Length: 600
Image (cartoon, rainbow, N blue to C red; front, top):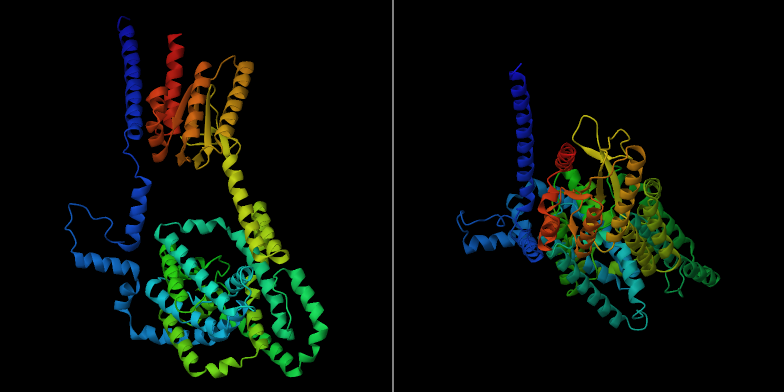
């Protein structure tokens, strides 16, 4: 009988020791967050990006390793700038046979298309052929895609002419117009190079996939209508690109141009469109993902089929340098072509040597067959352009966008209608505006969810998504589903949290006559925070503390914890409010709650 109290005391002591050990472990793990080193500065990351672009194998060097010689470092730089030095050493003659056939096939398509696209850009035919010579050669040295075909494209040609005509009329002064086009090409290359060099390739993603789908469809229709000038032999045609102006010009000029519509020209037009449409299914493999939005995406799509990866920033550097070199050699803006890349792939190309073969073939055509190419009928060129347009209109993708995301579909329709009924620049502006509006909407009103513990796990999930999740009475767990806690959404987050605290407090008082002891904020999705977000956290702490509620933060990321320490916020509210995970924060809150009850 006398030993019972002793046993009871030893059990209580054991439980107390276990609680203390758990508290010590949680505190130690919380120190991992609090004592983490400072994240690299933006300048350090920028320098690292540039070093990675040109010294990909030299970035991990340390003092413990043997320092590389100057010659080896220079060669590493050249290999980063010119990927051809990496794969060129292992290039075999068996690959050249495939590349030769692919290059010749590519040239047979590029020559008439380049002439037609130059006409679309309001330039003389030779400038389209120049653009199929110099830029592909530069890209072959600096690019890393094996399949992408470089040259002029329909949409860029139309965009260039639509914008440049507002500054300089090509009919009034063609020389000044050409100089302006080459200047624009130069600065386009500069911007591409800078974006790639400083790892800013993500900026092109502000023009969303849905907006590109709508823009491409509208541009294809506008380009097709503009080809009526060549097909119908109209001499006086509008410089505007909207569908109303183009159709008005066609109808007003039609009765004056019927004498130009001879039977042979109409027959040639019909046969050109028919042949190109007949052979399209044979040239374009059905499984190729050609609905990408830009040349880099086209290259990545074919790279995934071949089983290798492309660095988008390096591709932008390569395309930037090729456009800079092209602008100095009478070329206008070049990029990766949708249709010619598919032809290059289906023709069996192995490396970018197919672009070199194509460029040499086009150059020989310029030297030997210029007189023959000069007499290419405009109606045939218009037919060639028309044959490439159906691939730009992706109705199935537009329907899929509508099913998946209505806001994305709004951007798609906005771009389509803007290009079709206003102008190319209005269509782009509408697409970018709607895309930015979507981003701002998600930034200003981020997702904030109440969490509960999933049964038989230590995982916490949204109680709306998981109705079986268990809420802990007296402890409110909230997750911020936003990458940024900043001036744009700080007040919204504060108001939503305080509203939930008030609602939960009223519910507890009605049912259990208890109050909220703690609010846990899950920061696992939060990548960064600014001064406005820090001020809101401090205000939340003061308001909650005045009501006897503890503010607890769980899983803060590297930049967030660094900003909280730099702002001295943790010193003011206490470093004991930070935990490694929501589960550990919940355990600490429950332990504190039970300790308070036992003291009572």
